[in-house]
Amino acid sequence: MSLNIDQIDEYMQALVTNAKALIRESELLFKKKAYARSFTLSHIAREELAKCQILYAAGRRVIAGIDVNWKQTMKRLRDHKSKLNQETVSNAALCFIGGNEQVYNDAMRSFKASSDLRNEYKNNSLYVGVSTDGKISCPERVIDMARAQRNLELARFAYTEEINFQAKVGKLSKMDPTQLPDISKVDSMTHSDHKAILQAASDILQKTPKK
Image (cartoon, rainbow, N blue to C red; front, side, top):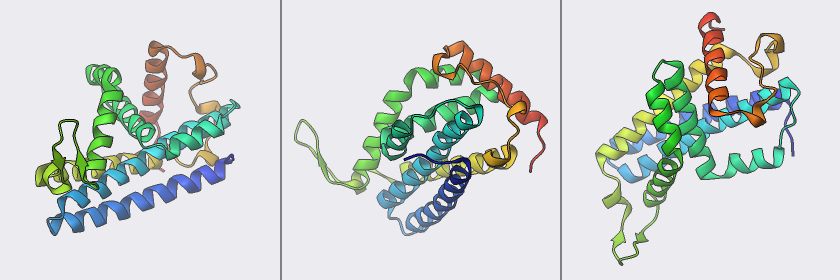
């Protein structure tokens, strides 16, 4: 299955709409002190928003005339850890664009371990589990008010950042390829190349008025 640019635009908008609803419902559960399930919904909202960046990357390849591995892309859109990895990378990129290169470097070094831990918390917010030493974990014992509140705040942040990003760059279908950074060598980029692309994107975003 493949998607055209118009479908990607529609998909990204639907993801933002769904994430907003998930955050609202998470807030309602938080107010009722249902912290574990509040955590679950805010976590899923973050995953939905991470999918926007996976789709954006695919769309940029389409615009640049670079082949998209749609089988792999669709798999990433379904895979929980892939979406969490994407969120970490996207947040790291925002830090770099904001001038904090050290946070970017630290996040890129540890993103897999971070994603594994967050996926584990998501599972623990839903299911009763048992550890290797035989201890039983119940959702309400694993997810307390502070953890649920922090995750809700992160979901709100991710939502705001995605809304701002989409407002700044506009729809993929309306982009002018001549005004975009060259990503023709995206598949062979080094770490330094990736930073250069982020810097170019930052320069363009700073010059582009909101749509």
